[in-house]
Amino acid sequence: MASSGVGGVPGSPCGACKFLRRKCAAECVFAPYFCAEDGAAQFAAIHKVFGASNAAKLLQQVAPGDRSEVAATVTYEAQARLRDPVYGCVAHIFALQQQVITNS
Image (cartoon, rainbow, N blue to C red; front, side, top):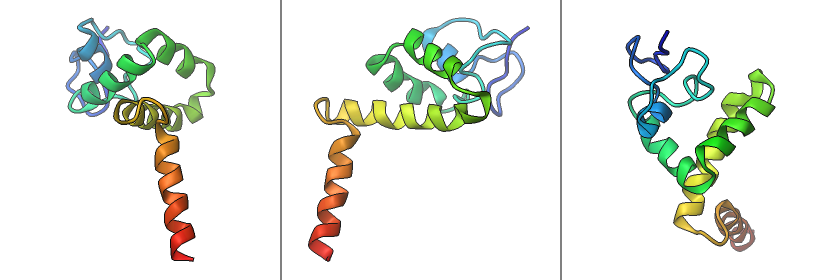
């Protein structure tokens, strides 16, 4: 039985499976977190930085109630790593710290 992804049509793959060009199984770990519409673009960054297998392992190691937050965090970190391969999201944190210092 195929998964529908978040807000997807039954039988359509989630964004991750769409990006990986594979069938989306009912037990797909990515389906609840990467919708069919824009999930493929988000998952592309994760796949490029961390790899699909590592992302799946990470989600499976976390309690089901926390997976949504983990998926969002990993997506943010992957996108930040693509923008700044050396510092990733730390560069954004540092910039925010500098704003606080200059505005104090």
